[in-house]
Length: 377
View 1 (cartoon, rainbow, N blue to C red):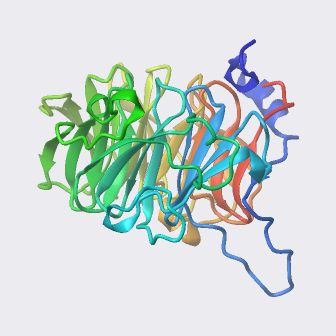
View 2 (cartoon, helix red, strand yellow; view 1 turned 30 degrees about the vertical axis):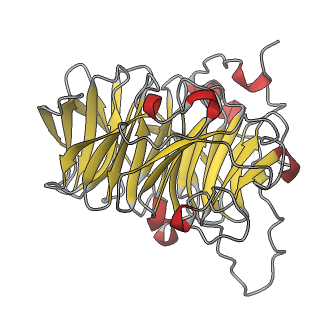
View 3 (tube, helix red, strand yellow; view 1 turned 30 degrees about the horizontal axis):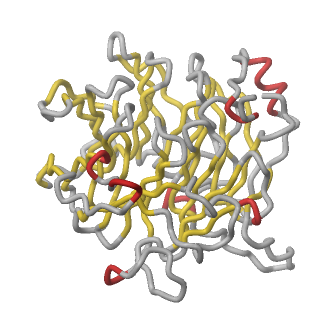
């Protein structure tokens, strides 16, 4: 029998989706309960820097500070159903996951789109690391005391700005904050018999920091890259040659994030002007500009639902300046079909890969999921 969360939802039209999601309440996934409300006291939410669903949606990973936590979505929000990888990017090359070792901040985590349980991370230490969170004794065990499931790692140098997988799961792109971009072939990272590999031959520099680029995302085929730039454009590049194919003049402010719709018909671009432009990939014209009264800050994260019909956005590090409420847009019409109530602006967002479940961070208490087991979709 297939795991519950890997069974694909049936597509819902706009009116039906609104009826489905409206009564749902968020479920909090936290390693400790949030403090009780106190008059005049405002608690800052945990600084979750990145979140990612696994290929089937059975696992959900986040990173906070120097640690990574992987939740088993099949078993619910009890912390005993999660794994914590402490000091995942430990200083000085100390064994990963060792308790009591100071670690650099983990900047990004991203599950492989093709291999369940294979997780990539990058940190302020300039390293890219590959983890197998299905390793015996890991998922379901709190802490990394039994030994961290490291498949391999390689050094790209400098703090990471983005981390994205090629759709076939063979490579990841890593962009540094100094705008140098590297391709990492994960097939060279995994050592034989599960031994950690150094990945010396895995890394290839693709860009030399000549342009200010905030994010790169692959097209669904993996043959093109969409690169967001400081000048309000998105460059479409051939991969792996990185030859320039086309430039979209998208926004008057910097473009921070870009995502290709799973259906292939739209490209979504988030900007510093607080809006999202939707581009028809057949004619490369902008068909919608998405905005809402509570979208008052930069758009730094985007996520399409599995069928490409709905879109959510997060403000990343700018969430502290945003308004509460998580908008869910209907892509074809550009309308907000629902607003998930939140206490703070959302920072990170991610739709489940095959169901109408949406995970988000930045709100009171930490990671939350709307949908989940028992919703039927």
